[in-house]
Length: 116
Image (cartoon, rainbow, N blue to C red; front, top):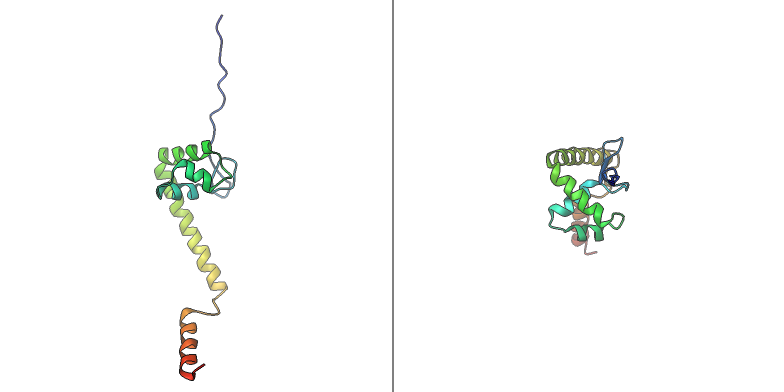
């Protein structure tokens, strides 16, 4: 009599949202955050501690995904950073700073001159 072991579906530690964002498991945590921590020398345990929304298994799984698909993930992160920079520039153009360093320094010089 032979026993068959039912194999479960492989776990998916990284998913891609419809908007193209790569996220860890079923969380909203961006893969970029885990990869950045990993590239800065953090262990899976430290990453799990920094992002309590994921399990230790998900931390290891997302690192393994990154190592197995490094070009894909690096290209994704590069696109994501370019989009973030574009959004930042657009926002700054629509919401200019009221006080720049130059304005504040000029005010400080004026106060110093007037003795105030």
